[in-house]
Amino acid sequence: MTDADVNIRVLDAAYRPFPTFVEWVSRTSVDTVRWDRYYSSLQSRAQSSPGALDRAREVAKRAAALDTGAIEGLYEVDRGFTFTVAFETAAWETALAQKGEAVRPLFESQLHAYDYVLDLATSAQPMAEAAIRKLHEVVCEAQPTYRVMTAVGPQEQPLPKGQYKVLPNHVRTRKGTDHAYAPVDVTPPEMARLVKEMGSEAFLSAHPVQQAAYAHYGLVVIHPFADGNGRVARALASAFTYRAISMPILILSEQKGAYLDALESADNGNYQAFVKFILDRSLDTIQLVADTLGVATAPGPEESLAAIRALYVTRGGYTHEQVDEAGKRLLEALAEAFKRSMPRNAGPKVTGRFELHATGVGSNAPTPAFRSLAAPLMLRVILSTAAPAQAGVSEHFNIWVPRDAAGEDDLLLRAANSGETLSARMEEVVSGISGVLQIRLNLFAEQVVNRLLADLRSQAAKALQSRS
Image: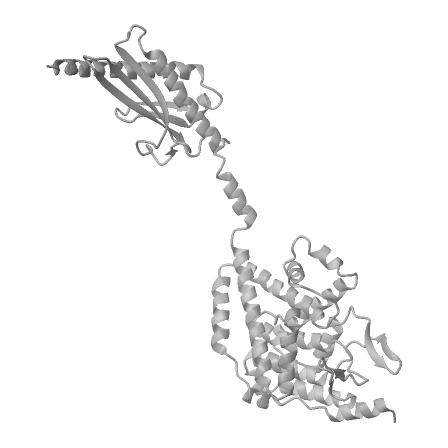
């Protein structure tokens, strides 16, 4: 008998069977308050958009399927890569291809495995050995070989799929110690016992987290297959959360250390540590689905950006800068019209000033459909007489432009004191003052100047009479 044979016998003898479910459930508990709170929050979000909920669950499934292979070291992932593939962003296929030609088939096999356990979950039938063997076949479909330690070193050998192991598969742990799994001859009866436990009344009435943790732990303790046991266990555990909340358990590759620590604690009799780990990962999944749902039901960035861009263009196709420029042009044209409207024979005793001021507007917009210029501008008209009949009158004009201008919409020039108003259509101003509008401006300016001159005459007479 070789040293290797002796070592295998020692490890076979060191195998510690998994507990009964009654023992498991008596030594573990689930924080159902957190579970119910998280899931209720998800359900309240999902009511308005069941289609988006399906899509969010698909994201969780893809993430679980991708990282389950990375946990086994079949390929490497990081957060960005998992996000890209799970959410099927524009570059996900390219990102997957860059990992090597073998990675996509592995991912797709693992994805099919989660679809398979979803089908098992919806059947509402107790778990059977045949189903677990089929699950192994599906999850390992793209894996042709596995590494075996032989007397001459590690070798790649064909991976038997859907079949229980025929060679011992004890392993060296990350701490450098040997860990014993079920001996080859014990594997079939142990799997039969696991399936029987999963069909028991106690199991079927338990919380899905306790079911998932127990099924996972029982399978990895036995390690019934030559390779792929971890992937099978994670997918098998997800059958019970699928049955309860229609989503898998997401364990990310970056959580591998905590995952192995929790399994090691269970090996030492602390089953609660592993139940808590499975609960935490289940709650992670619920929150991921809820947040994905929130993004899916919110307006997309392109929709919002398009709406924001639309704010800067009016329904007539003008930019707000064009509208403001039209308003400024109209006000400047009125100022020139005022200068022309002063009688040529006014003489040195009567003067007029027509000034544009960058200042705040003097009154509220006439209706909510109008606004002031972005840089408010006011035209001030001042007429005055010289001593001894010294007097002055003034008026100022504000310009109001349409908020959502089309060609037929009006711009308004309004006198702050008298309320006199001149309207001009955008199409008369936007490309330059039209001929008809120019005539109207001249007439309007003449009307205002005549009124102001009449007021000035009265004020000048009073000023002269008041002098002693």
